[in-house]
Length: 200
Image (cartoon, rainbow, N blue to C red; front, side, top):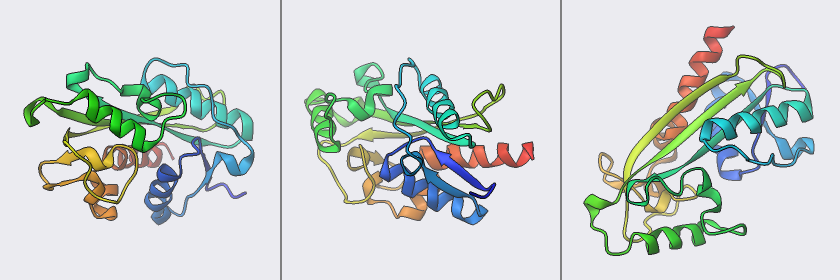
């Protein structure tokens, strides 16, 4: 393993593809924790920041390698910030993207466009080792609103329901390169790359 390999503290295939694409120009290899025999950490935090730190520390401890973790989710104003940190398991322990989207539509039934404001949040944490006292923590958000029905085939999670006013399309209809640039994760990763370069 070379020194430009970083463990991604996630087994989410959608996130892995985005990270690999975003890091490839920097000659940094992102390796998913599953390939190193690491199971998911128990996300016991009450915020995106807490859960991201828990996941990064878990991956560092299990592999002895630096790790990046991502904790992200959807905040819907009409639902008092839900699904929030529970976005991936919004519809229960065996949740799928489809069941999560169906539940979200059900909960917002009857609300007009103005009442459907929402945003994606992404917190990225980079830890050099398990006991890193100064992990890099970067946060970004992406404003939009929730559609009345899914649109588009790209992306994952809530992307088909997330309408972007400036782009006049859903997140699932965006060109992938553009999404990687303007999304909550793309913005947070740009901040993380700056912070990592400044630290060298």
